[in-house]
Image 1 (cartoon, rainbow, N blue to C red):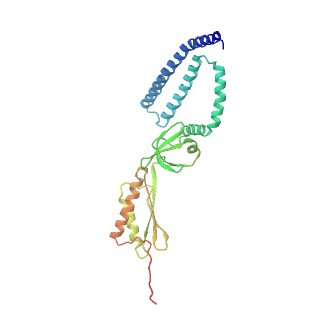
Image 2 (image 1 turned 90 degrees about the horizontal axis):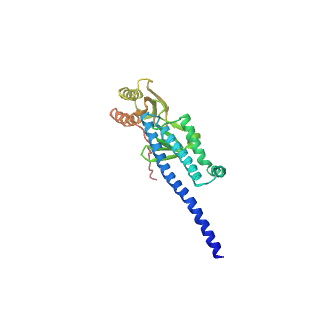
Image 3 (image 1 turned 180 degrees about the horizontal axis):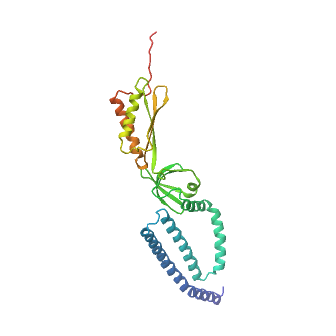
Length: 273
């Protein structure tokens, strides 16, 4: 290649570099400052929501959505500063968005699920929820996932898509719950005496509600036991306290009153021939 041609092309590259360098430098500075401003804005909005005591379910969702939208606008502005024609860029971005949308259909479904959860509010932060095979307390509802803490303090991350369309049990929506229990006695034991013990335990427990009234009845004459069905109403937060109390105390009271609780037994007979 001729030396003059090489020098000419070098001059062109240098001229282009000198022309675009200030724009590129300005774009980088704008990007850095813009990201810092967006961080401050979202942080400030989060604090404002705390002062206004906004629903804890909405706060992380709104902050995340606002941050994402501001960053998209910032990137588009920075690209325009470099000199890229925005009309062409938007067309390319639209085509790329379509392709990415098809590739990330599951992610978009999770996003839509998050929006549906926030609109219809089947649960909120702090609720005890059983869904998608997991049981835990809702800690945070994000754009794409819901984060829960299991009862043994493990973090559970569930995609919003399946969560919004699947079945769930929310244990926190009602203020009271019914504790269902079953206790068995032997066929030779006094039914009235056992029933009186169960009634006394429920009547004297401070966390068992008087209304609706508790229910105790013989529900089954089983193979080796007479079974009682016991139902008591409690405040939702007291469910397990009453359940575990009854399991332990019924056994102790039955023992004191010589009432047996049947358990599987096997008689073995040995014959000498």
